[in-house]
Image (cartoon, rainbow, N blue to C red; front, side, top):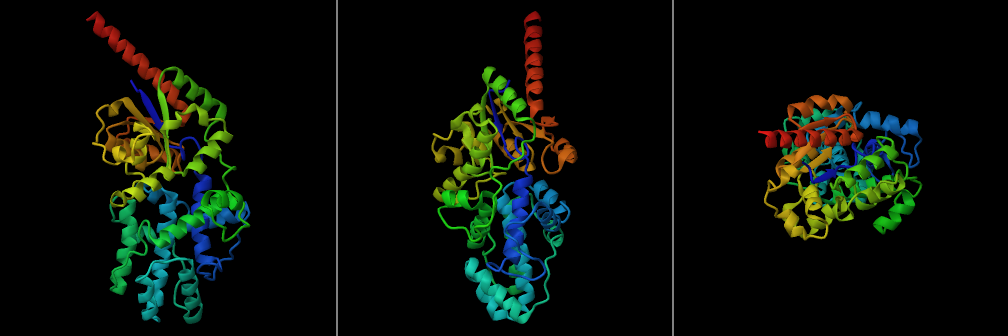
Length: 394
């Protein structure tokens, strides 16, 4: 029977809508804001209404096709998603610009990219007018044959640039200057001015942004989720979290919904923990999902050293006593490497359509939503008890 259950947050406890909205708004801003590339073709508004947000998302995710494609390849981090989607479009823009200003483009590919660099690229684009418009759906065609690995996808953008420029470059890589700029832009959208200043200790570029932190959408009645978690606690099961969200974006919404204190605080591991570990062990980066570090750290406890989690020998000796509950292929892949059981929830972006993928990958359990977890545990306990009684009878 399970002694520990580790939960993902997005797609399990909270809707991913706001996070994915933020991903698309990040790409939109970097393409069209006058403080970034400032490309024509879309009006940038730092305080968009819901209708505008939906229109931006429809374009950037190509009617959700790109999102489903990314999730099927284990891309679990919204920071990586935004960096990949924007990086691919920037790479295509530079390819078009290279036909008119090859020396300028060569210089761009040889240096880390920051906001000032994007502004300079935008100025050159407006001057020479290369043949370019964003073609979002094209990304899946160009990168479709890559492995199920988000790092490889980001690396593919570098390789595409190298193919047409002849210049080795890492400007689009995970952890690059451009990746960090994309991350900051995402954080500004999601947190809003006040929380961004507190959390990131810097001034926002667009202080008009309202933020989504306190507007999260639970995937089931919070009272029902709370009741389920309390019952699991009463049964002696340790409850933890392994999420791609940063610490603030995990704690504030769960506290608001009254769920936070149902979890063992020593086993709540977030993207903030991942970032800190990557700074100490850069040769092991990236450590976000589908890398199992997030869940391994939650298993051992945050109070244990990062060394133990990074260097853990997998699969875990008692892995089958641990159940990981997630909505994505990235979660399942992490569970597999750890030797843990996996329960898939059908409340991620693909909804019930994800069932076929999880069945194909032989997930041990598939739940309509997270509240189905308690009936599952009750059934498994009954089966175990029946088996033990039968063994005694024999």
